[in-house]
Amino acid sequence: MVKKYSEIKFEKLEDGYKHNLDADFGCFVLWESTFEYRSRVRNLLNEQFEILLEVEIEWSEKHLYQNACRLYEAPFSSKENLDSNMDSIMGKIGGTNFILFVIKDNNPIYTYAQSVSKKVELSNLNIVEAKYKVRGWIENDLGLKNAVHSTNNIYEFYFQAPLLLNYDLFERLVSGEHLKIEKLSKDLEGANGWKDYDEFFRMLNLTSNYLIQRGFEDLFNIDNDEKELDILTDSYQRLASVLGAEQIWLEKPHNGVVSIANKDIILDIRYIGDFYYDTSWQRDMLNNKVLKNKIFIPREDDYFFSLLYHCKAQKPNVKKEYIGVLNELAKKLRFEWFYTDLLTNDETIGKALGGYYIANDYYFSNPVDQKVYRNLNIIKHLPSNTPLDIKENKSNIQVLKSFTKKFIPQKIKTVIKKMFPKRYGEIA
Image (cartoon, rainbow, N blue to C red; front, side, top):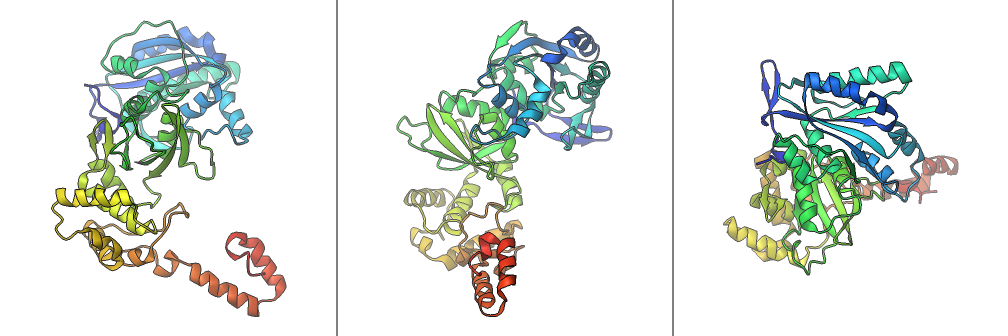
């Protein structure tokens, strides 16, 4: 059975790193301007690897830029002026057609290496060196930089190959099958939206490390009217690119919109390091996640405490539907200390969450997303890396405004207002 993205694990060996698949795989892409190198590249890859597929792929003009953004993990929005981003990406690609090689490497050499995008990550040196050799040929002959693309590691392969081909072809390739296909005319999977939640989660499960945080119980019901998915992942941009999310609000790229069953669904993507939850807790939740009804969801204890935290620390009021969920989870977990009326008692809930934080070495920090509501009556009971007076600084701002109105000269007020228009705009 083919492993999923989040099931791939690396271990450190004396002479490098090894993952838990029987072989390594990679994609090599020749963009349209480099077709004359096709046979030369084929010969090189045959010498070093096993070629499982060589195919010409044609993208549509309609989705060309979207496809390119997704493949290179760049935010995509049709409603923003992205000319500079477009020039950079389209300068590499050049046209709608390209040659894709899928290779198998039975003796990969993994260590940390820096990519063109400046990431320092585990990479298969065999693939990386082959890519730079081909790039060297092309740059010397044609003066073109980065006219060849490849995946650097197994995670990138699991992200890109299913989108370039499709789920079924990907499964056949990683099972070691050699495929003979001359040409495919197709955009990336999901370019026109997703037929239904089955198709959506089938691709997401294969290509991403994620979980649905809450509200997943009725997603597959025919009468489901859910308009938002709350997701936790280790890379918000990779997940958004997998799903073809249109990141309409580029100042908040962790939000996006996808089409599922002809309905626009908002994605609220939380990610490791955004402090929506403690970073260690986010990692623990992703490591502990379970697959249930085709969806990765939190383990029951993580679900209970993260939902309790969400309802009480991040919202002014508890949604009615979550009360039943918390009660049901408490029964399953044998939490005799929990009952519904406690949800109105901030002190008791705050201390319970604080105890959970202490036991797990979790700490509160202000979320990157400044629009997340913060209930100080709960948060004050949590171990914190953030001083309480910074957790909620509105009162301090009011004091500053009052002080400046009385004692600061008008010219200085004007300077402060220009420097801090959002927070101090009322003082002048």
